[in-house]
Length: 363
View 1 (cartoon, rainbow, N blue to C red):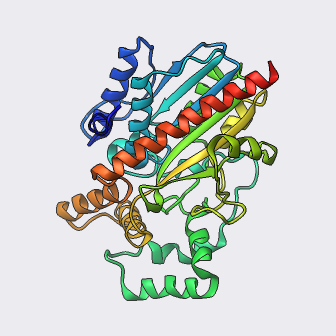
View 2: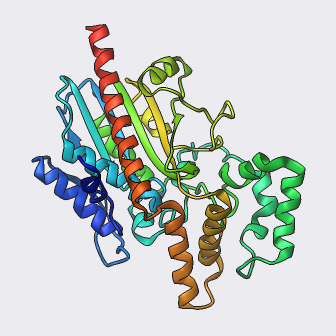
């Protein structure tokens, strides 16, 4: 696929992205399993978690590709999934690719990072039958992150600066982004029950992935790191598979080792892969694409959450806040899009080849 064709993989809206994904599956003769969310999209369109299995249903090895866990970040992942479908899966025996498109369709359509429940889906996969994780740092700064008026006052910014001075830049990042269950109207809220997306994704795994003996996963995100660079973050709970992951994908970072632009978080979506597919070895990465400096991304995210909590003063302000959030997580630039596609395609092919190598070594 040349650079001009790769640009057509990207879309200006969820509705267009979904149509391209469905068309790519139809062109390959692959059925689509659409799990519809009973809420309207921003353009009145259907919202759904769309599932396409490319390969044998009884494959013992499976690559699971995820897009839109963080709604507005779905533009990137959707393009990669559509491109991989258009190219066609390499002819490997006993290997399938499971595309789960727009896991958070509401956020994707309405340009929110969170779900319709205001939940950060990557903090929602916790055991709600046990005491919920505590994040005292977030409680301390919640009202300064999302103050009554926007732009924030100097007093609110001074509170955040004081927290940064005391705990360091990484400490502030952890307080904001670790996940919290105390403020339902806040940022990085993990919820108080499994969301629709959580429950639906688990049901998808139970239907499609419980026969696989080895599962690779690529969870696609945007917003952290250098512009156009796809950081490959190790995302398996079993450190024993790290050497194989490195063999497949090359240099990996690790949130727990402090080598990643991201931080440890409560309730990541990979939890579902381990809990719903205990029969399989799981080797996964998060593919995190950089967009703009954090000095632009975080204010855009705070402003959108502020609007959800307090409401914008007027329609123009609301539109500007929404556009700023979209721009922060989806740069509308040809060089960025081409870099995203080339790296995303490579990561998927590396995983498929790695699964096949494992099969041969055990054969």
